[in-house]
Image (tube, rainbow, N blue to C red; front, side, top):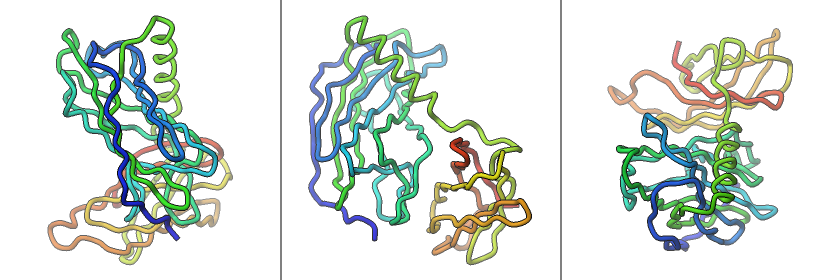
Length: 265
């Protein structure tokens, strides 16, 4: 059974004053079962993207959620509205694992890459990020914290920059014809996704549920050398809201992972 969610929110104010965006890290924020901090790379690129990472260090036995936590979970969220010269922030996600309750997440410490949009890279930027995520053991505790990426010493700059690059390097690669979802069909009570894999290893599919749908965890089956996933449909939108079926996914097999978008055949 899915862990219940505690009602208490934990709130932390940022401990560092706004600074010019530079490689460094926020102070650690400690909560039940975990500690978190925000890292940033040295500077935004020519396109105005500043790379960062949310580092989540979990205590043994604790877990946290993936981008699609199911119908009762808490996906990691970031709000940068208190920042200066930062117009947006988007998380990326390494491949998760499936827990026996059915939801997807991480049972080990994890760094979530984040891309900050810097409208004017030549001018002052201050990253003030309000983070919201769930940390779970017997219950799931919603955690809220404000993290400020502070300018550090040269040694810390190098360490933070390397940690950010490592977080991005751990992301799934792009799906391809040889490793990914090759087809998707709608059978009413379920969606069926056909996969292509590099070998005979077991595979796990993680789906980002489209708006208006309720999907149950995919169930893998292998026949005649092909692998397919049956995705039970609990609810679906009706009428014009239904639209074409498409979802983002992460496919894991043989210790490797890819991400892509599957669209209805």
